[in-house]
Each structure stands twice: as structure tokens, then as C-alpha cells.
Length: 91
Image (cartoon, rainbow, N blue to C red; front, top):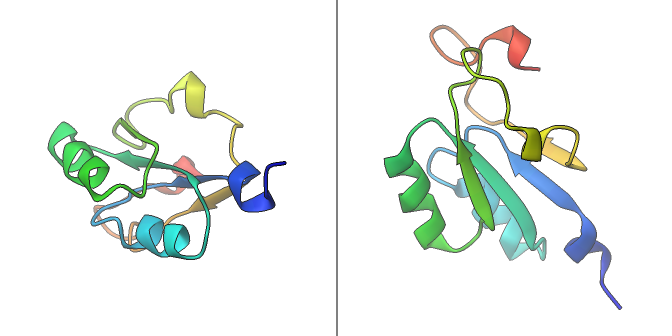
């Protein structure tokens, strides 16, 4: 039988260094997905092992991929809002 932490699907929007994903994984969540704007950051984050997958797209300029639309129980976003960062419409 699956535990709740296995069923809870999390999106870390603007994963950056992966601190949020790592912290969630340390607390038992295993279904963590990420977003980043570049392929280089995506590859670096995947090596850390906390994320199942990471999509690359530019928030506010590209649509969120269909595989990510309305698929998550929790969405995190840390240190991504402000001048020259994520636009308000991303939410």
C-alpha cells in the first residue's frame, strides 16, 4: 500500500539549486518534479536525485507543458518573484 508521501505530487517551480526539492525529499516526499529555464540547470538538478523529472520552459514566455497542467497537489516557488524574475501571470 502506498503511503501519502508517495502519492503527493509536488512541483518545485524555479527549482534553482534544488534546496526545496532536497528538503522535501529529506522529509519523505518522493514524487517531486521541478521546473527550470535551462537544460544545464535541469541536468545539474537531476544529478542531485531529489527530482523525478524537470521540465525546462521560460515562465511568462512559454506555456506550462501539458504534462504539468493541473497535475500537482503542491506547488512551491522560492526566491523567484520580483523585478526581472517570474511575472505575476505565472500564477
